[in-house]
Structures are given as C-alpha cells and as structure tokens.
Amino acid sequence: MRPLLERAPLEDFLRERYHEADIDISSSGVEPYMMAELRDLLGFDLEQLASVSLRDSQSAGGDELRALIAARYGLGDAGRVLVGNGSTEAQLLCLAALLEPGDEVVVVEPAYHSLLATVRARGCRVRRWRLRPEDGFRPDLEELRHLVTSATKAVIVNFPHNPTGVTLTAEELTELVAIVEQHGCYLLWDGAFEDLTFDAPPLTAPTHYERALCFGTMSKAFGLPGLRVGWGIVAPEIVHAAVGVRDYTTLALSPLTEWVAQRALEGAEQLIGPRMLTAAANRRLVHEWLVARPGEMSFTAGGASVIVFPQLTRVPDTMALCERLMSEYRVLLVPGECFGVPGRVRLGFGGTASDLAAGLDALSHLLDTMAEEAE
Image 1 (cartoon, rainbow, N blue to C red):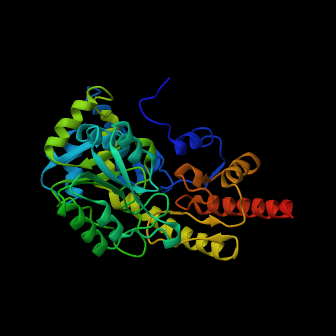
Image 2 (cartoon, rainbow, N blue to C red; image 1 turned 30 degrees about the vertical axis):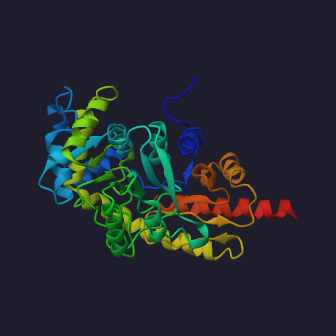
Image 3 (tube, helix red, strand yellow; image 1 turned 90 degrees about the vertical axis):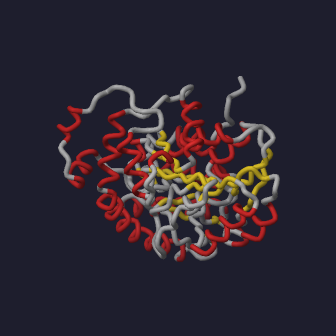
C-alpha cells in the first residue's frame, strides 16, 4: 500500500505514547485549558451554545471568525483568511493548490514534518536551507540568498523554529522577505510559535508581502490544541483554490469549534498571558537544570518558543533514552530522531511547573542510571 503522504515520524512516536504518559515534557505548546477555565476567564455562559446551529459552516471559515483573525493581524480584508482544522490543514490545502510537479521549493531544515511532506508529495524539487547545530541553529541568510533563484517557486520557513526554538530578529525577517521578494517567490511563513516569545516582542508576520502565505494556530500560545483551529493569511485567489481542494477533504470546520475559537480570539490576552507567565518561570528552571549538568548537555538558549533542543553528549541513542523514560517513568520526551537530528531531544516547558519538575527529576535519574550502567 502506497500512502498519499509519507509517514510523520513525530506523530508516529507521539501516537503510541501521548495518551499513556503521566507527565509530558515534550510538547511545544502551553498547558491546555479546560472548558471550565475558558468559561471563567472569558466570561461566557455555556448555555450560549444552545443557540449554535449545527448546519455546515462556510468553506473558508465563518465570517465572524475570519474577521477576528484578520483584525488580529491588522488587516481589513477577511477575504484573505482561510480557517483550517489546525494550521497543518490550512498549509496543506494552500500548498496543494499552489504547487505543481517539478516546482523548485526551498524548505528550512530541520522542520515540522508537514512542511516538507506536502512539497514532496506534490512532486516538487526540494532545496534545503539547513540550520546547522555547529552554528547554534542560527539561520544563515547568506546561504538562503544563494539557494533562492529565479527558478524558485516558494520558500518555506518556520520561526520561531520547531524543534530548536531559534528565531529571527526583526532585521533578519526584513532581509529574508527581501531575498524572497527579489525573485518574486512565494513565502510560506509558519508562525505557529509567534506569541511564544520572552526576550523580544513577537515577530510581525510578513502579511505585507503580496506573495506571503502566513499561518497561525490556537494550539500553541492559546493552549487550545484540541480545538484544532488554525489559519492562513493568503491572497484571495489562493483561498478560492484551497477551498476547492477542501471540497474533497473536510469541507469546513464545526460551528461548535468556530464558536469557541471566536470567544478565545476575543479574549486572547486573558488566555495567553497567564500561560506565558508560567512558561517564563519554567524556562528559568529548565536553563538551570541544563547548566547544572556540564559535560552532558549542549544547548542554545533561544529567545522564543517553549522548547529547547539540547544535545545529550553522553547518550549514544536518544530514541532509546526516550523510550526508556516512557516505559520506566511514564514521562514523555521527544527524541531528535523524529526531526532527523539524532543525539538531541525536544524538551518542552510550557506545561505546569509541577509536571516539569517531576519530569526533569525522572530524566536526571535515568541519565544517572544509564551513566552507571555504561561504566
């Protein structure tokens, strides 16, 4: 059997473990909210759901939801908004509509699986813009400048970056857009982590560039991954083409989902603010823990996201480490193998302080045990 898309190593790893773990120190978003918390924080009455009609929603998303998303980006034109069942669907729909076999596409690497798999499934020629560990995964814009040519159809990037947490400065973003614009390429900007920043204001999505496709989600900073709501800010003609693809997949979002998403967007700061305060404290704890294990950990302290991507210098097999952490301690940690970077782990600190402390204690104990076994 030949699947339409290649397997997603990260999702394959999580699928078998995510719901079995007692503690999660792998996730790239903040602690998910409960519906009761949404009710209390946003001040709505769940009885209001009684008036929601369960008819099909509109193909590109309901008008009210699209208008709220457009306003969040300072746009007056909701016709540029495509709402997806998660940003991954929005990206897939747009790329399926935009790309053709043989197109040349530059993709950042390492990357979240969907950014590359859809391009390959469309039969495109892929050129990789590599973020190298020896450079602290810092993006080399001069290298990008050499990769992008008049033959390039699109450039696909993700900043703040998954899985490393590295991001761009505002000046670097301006330069990146200029490189793409020089050749008239499309720019797919995956901003899933855009609100997860600590040391600088969030980057402004490059919606001003007419060939940009800018994507966001409620799964990360909003703490609503189970809502499955994401979006793209794209040209109206791409919205039109993308819903033509959607006619063969999900058709639309659930009106119930859209209603909750609307309330969340209206009270965005009430949701994001408290979770980011917790994440900031957790970030300090993680950095202290990493620094306290000299000779074992090599890491770059990024200024954004709720993940770090340390190299475990004394662990020969990080996949085996994570499998053992799960089986012996019921703690979930993602191995770098899921991103094509063995020897590292994606460690998330967006959850509760108690879970993080317990997860790090378990990881410390396992590392010490493995070191003793290796002697």
